[in-house]
Image (cartoon, rainbow, N blue to C red; front, top):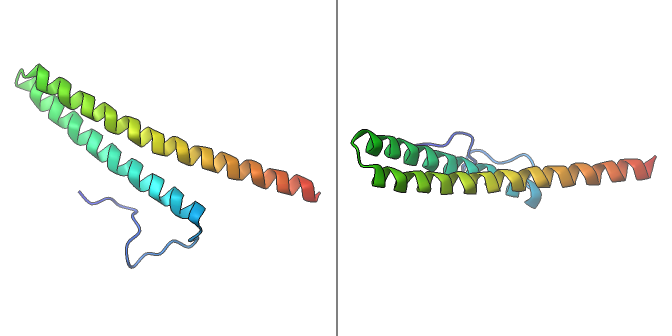
Length: 96
């Protein structure tokens, strides 16, 4: 499965600062984990349909793990944005 919105050799980020690159990496990692979680949920559904509930449980746990990692990346990005916004507000108020 191809992830859309990734940075490749032809697409360079406009802002190549370390902070921005970390944000890009967080989004890409979160997307990969969401994709893996979806695959695991589909596998769990297939196993439930065939009556193999133990295998369905195994894939459900894997899906939850991928969801947890995706959320961790998302929260890290939200925290970064909040800190940058707060920092910019402090600078703006200091200059007034």
